[in-house]
Length: 102
Image 1: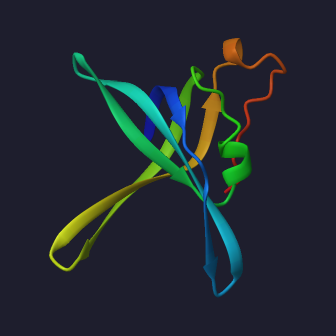
Image 2 (image 1 turned 180 degrees about the vertical axis):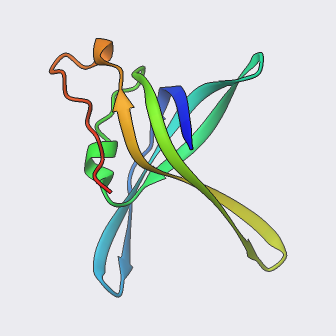
């Protein structure tokens, strides 16, 4: 699934410990149009958290996502994992789109 949007915020990365060692999760907030109204959506990335966190606030682009919901103790939680992205070149002076590798 792909979503076109504008980066509104880049949150502080969260670090965690797992069986495979230490890891990092980066979250950004984008704004996208849903019908006539703008909506905000939190996107997370673990595999390329450092590159994902370098996307500048105000940049527009296309974000390729996998939404996933899970249930815990009767409550439902949804995470939107961004596995790749393309930043529009007008905001990226070097011409690099900062794609994530899957």
